[in-house]
Image 1 (cartoon, rainbow, N blue to C red):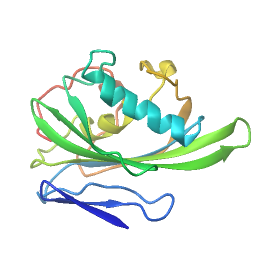
Image 2: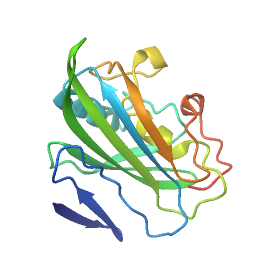
Image 3: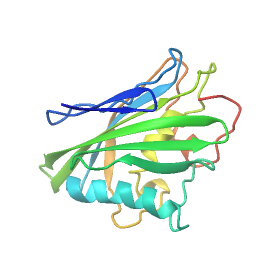
Image 4: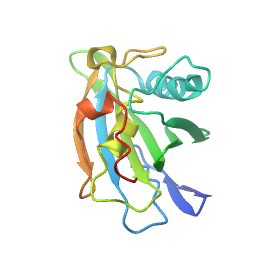
Length: 183
């Protein structure tokens, strides 16, 4: 396993296919969300789409529907994982992704996406689904109201787990964050 120490946070890069990349947080009480989804596309294209959304946001070619957050890439050297950051007026979050090739008996190529977003700030009571949306906005497709850059990633969420007080409301992802809650 490769370890990266960044801004006081230890991130673990996967050594085995399917490992989670959860960034960790320097504060004990924080919000997080772990999302597993299956995209009907090979993992190289899924990773390319996630990176395109992040990279093209700065050029105004992709817009995050969930508020005024700005995504950035912290680590992209591993072919099956990414470490990202997202900041806005009330949050500072780290997001880890792993991509594992899968196969759909109905469609052929598929990719298991595992995303984990974790606030780097002290958590208020509720997070307004922010951690969940941090992950979801980078892989959702047109059918869900998202705007792909290269690949319309058709698929479905397999599981969503959140911290206590964490939300997983898809509708919240498609409108600006309320800014009422930290983290």
